[in-house]
Length: 155
Image (cartoon, rainbow, N blue to C red):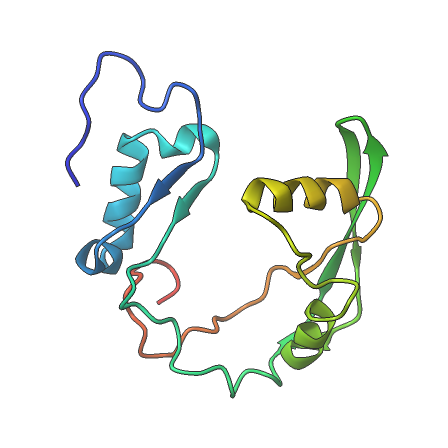
């Protein structure tokens, strides 16, 4: 985690930065966030963190199907030519199993794509036709209880 020293602000173009922390760095995630900001990651408003290969959030996901998503959000978007309005519609509660079935349905599954730019184009092209649904503001975590690596508020 050596910092880059320069005369100007880090990440002057505000590009989305990608980080690949080691397992030791990942265990001390708050410290790693400080490093990311020292590199200018905050200037883009978002950054991608790729966990180390040896990190696993859960041993398996067999025991979360009955977990309830109390207020799934349907994100309604209208607009065209780069100008969009978005509002949220709260849906009835659903289980993770029901959400998974919905996510894997023909309507919501990830379309075929050539690369991530192609996938992003398809996302924006179809955003006003198929309203995304997501589980927001859910208390708790789907990490195993013994997963204590991200020493953040998730503990």
